[in-house]
Length: 458
Image (cartoon, rainbow, N blue to C red; front, top):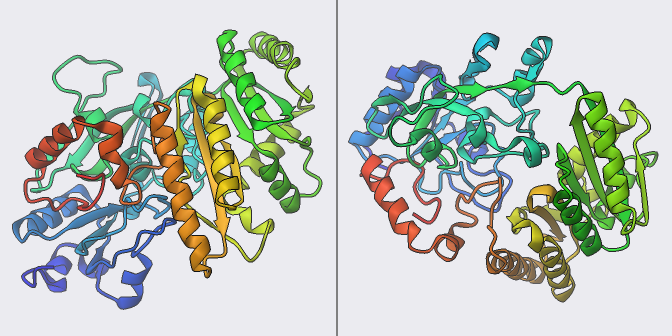
């Protein structure tokens, strides 16, 4: 990094919220992926003005800047692989305005989704995207990766809810990308351009979100199948019958085994399980739940409707634990987040499940299969003894095969976790000539390439 930017320069902007402490720098050197990179400074801004001043300084001396939220990323997206400055945006965490009359809220990027939804609950509204990390990730990071979660099958991803972003560009200029209108056809859709850009085009400092009414009723249908492939066929059959669940999750038999070790009294059937949740009015919920029973019964080993709200809440709470629960299956092994976020068009779901199972068996690496199967998103949790070099090598080969299988089936290497550094090598294969257009946009908005360099295969 250029010696022309010093800690004192940064402290003139943010005071003691800038640090070069070895211990703190280490804490910002990684996320949950295998990607690592040490920053030179960590800076914790509290305002848009401070972010603008920092970027002006960084741009002048061509210092890399990586924006970071809660550090919950799974692809190295907020890891400073080129060093420089990490902007910890988690301190900008105000809910600025709840505007129920206009069906929207204005927040800063450090707001945690669960906290926002707790604030909205008394009004009878919510922000639907529901990642497994909703209790601790930040909205800035969620939007930068176009994250989603379990409700996206009905309600959509972050992209469907962002009306406007206040963004600081690489040279420190501040722009707004949209408006407070629920629709607009004025000019380029800069808002959507910034969503999913992983901080490579600008730093988000304020967000205007659309919100929707909380559903009054919910029911959960729990179906078990002899094979995960059959479960995938049941999902296709459900959707093609005109039923749109609010959530549709797969938990394969290995995942069920892990969850039972976490909670022995958890009531889930044997086999590969699909959780269908429906929400809405009382009549719609009952009719939809019964239709799912009718459609899936010919394929299912067992199928039933959850008995009450408590059982539903317990099952969904267990579902949220899946990512962290792998060690219960084998304490010697650790989950490695790679090959974990593939997605394919719905009709290819059974084929992706089959390919993943074949890859797992070929490389002799146990894997849990779970995730948002209702929109084609399959999470694969592979776990190994990370001290064993041969297992690490097989893991990397297996993950590569999973990524390529998703692309071969017309899908994507990332549905919601982002590309970051971990999956950058697949961008050319997935996006083809469109990569040159992306690089041209990057060059126009960040000609000195200081914003989150080394990401997205740019």
